[in-house]
Image: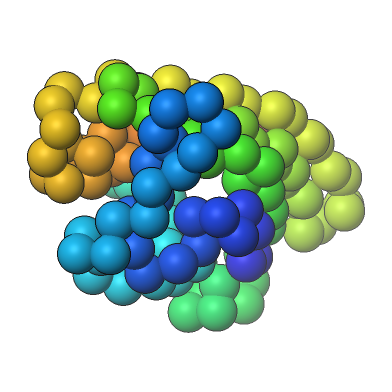
Length: 143
């Protein structure tokens, strides 16, 4: 299903915290595609690889009308400092067959290895992979 993102980071430019409560919107450093589109797709790709299933998809590009679970991800906070990236997430999983819902919270912290745009985007990639790993752990898959 669609994800929710804080509006502060839901923009084409990269955003990082500066001193105190200030943030920097890096006009010359932009995402290749909107985060609202790329994050669900990347979580689905990572989750597919982790659980070994080829029918994991993201909204609205879902291919499986006969899915077993729907996962809702609410990024409540995405904070980027010069040293680290923090995701605070609430997410829920709904079993389609019995409508049973499980809700969980998750905090992912990734160190940013340097000051470059590549260092920041690599931290995002690792953090998104961490989200997929945590979701995979919670899926009641048949072994």
